[in-house]
Length: 551
Image 1 (cartoon, rainbow, N blue to C red):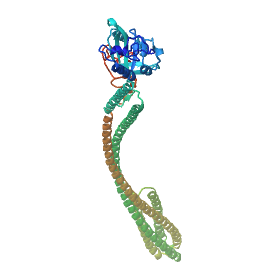
Image 2 (cartoon, rainbow, N blue to C red):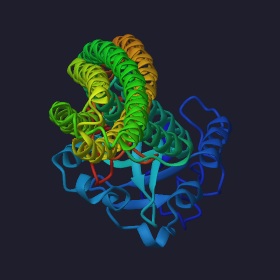
Image 3 (cartoon, rainbow, N blue to C red):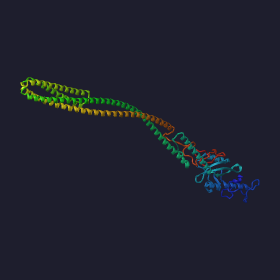
Image 4 (cartoon, helix red, strand yellow):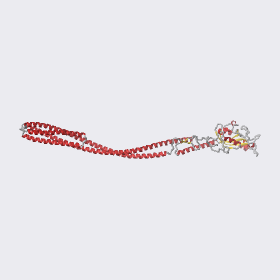
């Protein structure tokens, strides 16, 4: 049958008797019968069916083309005239055509060994074709290979579909591998493999998602670190604030104690000022009494002067008594001088009382002045009594002491003047004492205001102390919260450390290839590499691509 299918090999495609195009015929054009006498119609029909459904090409043993049917020519895009006489290597890639494997492939065929398998070929335009074919050596007489016939059909679509499937599988493995690393917390993983269509968009989406998550986790890490630092600062500041608050509370208590002492001092000053005011009032009363006594003495002296004037004729006899009267008047004069001095002392004491804080000594000073004024008033009274007695004696001798009476009258008038001066001085003393009393009242009022103010200060200090204690409690709570925040951020930092965020990016290129992901024409279904075996594959010149299994 093979002889009838492939013929003698001497005809070409243009010959009507070509064994490629037709079955063998006799000289009359009838089909040649086989040895058993069959007509060969069944074999001819079989051959015709092969030619209609498959591509057939004939080669000489040296590899040059002899003939090809329409199916094969349509498959590779050539006309018969373009390939007839050309070597088989025009259908394979150059690298494979120069390889030892290709030379061995033709050596096998010339030895009569057939070859069958998935064949990688190149058409006229350089496009890769995948053929499922069989190389069949045709023998002549003496078992010599006369020609080699190749029967093939186009499986390019199926191979490309398989390649796409394998490529998709590898691309999915790349994505799954990257996702495994991503699930383990490696945020430096990136898919550098290139892919088209949905897989390419999926790669880009994965890379963008990891980029965004990496940036977000880095920001969270920075925030966590900043928060931890802030929490530490808050905790430290809280400790300092707590210490400061405790110190403020202690100082507030000290201020409260000082204010309490001030209140006591103000109360004592108020009592002292009250005593001064009372003493001043008493001194004023006594001064007024002394003034009344002096006025009475003045009145008496005026009466005496009148009597002396009436008894001027008899005063002469009382010269001796008038001398005593002169002594008494001198005593009165001394008293007046002392009264003047006391008045001056009283004025000084009054000025001191007005310029200094009130004290017990000031009160005692006013008391002494008042007592001395009273004693002077008594002495004045005694002196006037003595004068009255002397005057009585003088009246008995008035006739004999006219001249002395005249002088006594003059002295009496002088005493009246001195009494009036003493009365004026006492009036000034009373006025000064009244001013002292008014100032004492003002001091008492000011002391009252100071007492009220100090009480308000004490209340404010107490409020400050209470607020400081509350602040200390708040600071303690803040310190606790800061510690809790620090613990939380530390746990957050530990969780973030699970992610790999190193600066250098680690690209994921898959398990079965490096670099660019295989496209539809760069990957193939693995088969046996043995080109001489029944499943060997002919690459036709380019040889197996780098990184793939020979097909």
